[in-house]
Image (cartoon, rainbow, N blue to C red; front, side, top):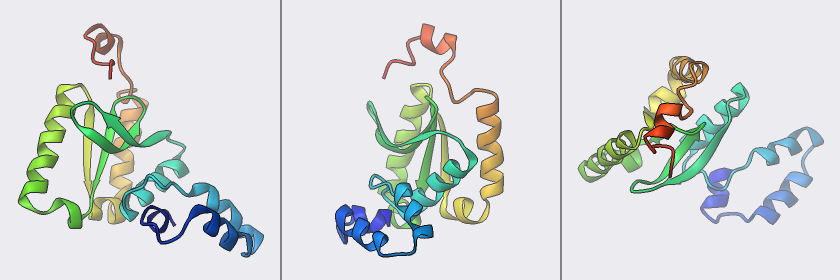
Length: 151
């Protein structure tokens, strides 16, 4: 649904009308729609984080980088790379530039492939849970003292 809305294939009022005609058990799915998702891969990761109860923000703008796919807490960035947009040499180089800039600013970057999100999620989830449990997704007093939390 995210991709259809973002691509302009259907408008939100039209989607609401369609969902209203479905059995009631399907109506809660409308609340899961996020038009900011730029790919099905982002949608899959976003819904998995939601199921885990891990708060995130989608398509967050970061100075000198642009929008990142998902931001967990204040500084854990998830970039979700489908092959269609991230396999060419120019896109590959730009992704690495963005990663370096994010790290320079104190962010933790997890760049995930299609296969990691779709087939190896348990491993990805364990890393995310570990970072969150250690509160590494949040700015520390040292980060704040150094001004890294000012975006």
